[in-house]
Image 1 (cartoon, rainbow, N blue to C red):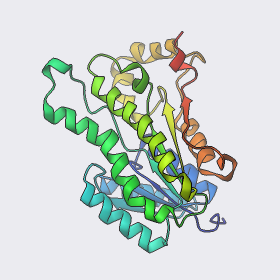
Image 2: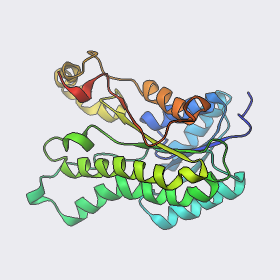
Image 3: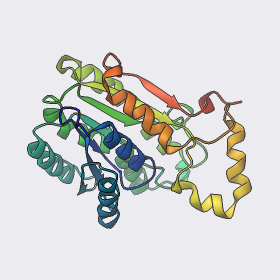
Image 4: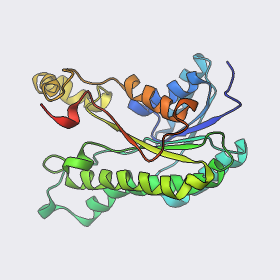
Length: 254
């Protein structure tokens, strides 16, 4: 398999769910893929799985909310490969639920760090190496919650994802002069192990989620990965500062 002129893609939060499918798809596209996560055993297993599929990958264990860890590890990656072509800021999550009245400062800061600080830390560290990349790009993840402010208890999650939408456009403005494109994807309800508990304990609730989706079904991780693949590739070379909804029309409601 050719390596797209040895292009290198770094995917954060890539040991499972959507992140791993994105890593797998970019690997099939020919990238050397760097997987990040905080579960080292899972990371090692994913590297073996990718190798069995003929994909060259490495795992780097670091916490994307820790700026020192991010900077040190991305420095190592950039120096080893001489560049970074694609940064996929996949790491993030709900972080739990809390209404504002009861919300602790610690909870607030943890959710903001997981979803927004992480994008800043990784992007800042990667920019010097993206400048050396081929059709370099950053791809972030926002959410419907960034527009509708999230459901009960998810207000800070929505706030953090609104921040991701804004920083995506701000980075695109800041980096355009270097030819670095910055876009975001906004996945809707995707059928991943993230929902395994409710799927097994309350299957009727899980099944009802599709009623709020215009296309009448949940998305699959591979459908997010295909859009990320497009944004990373040559066909999207004139696209920047955009957010693509991947939710079967869920954002419009029905």
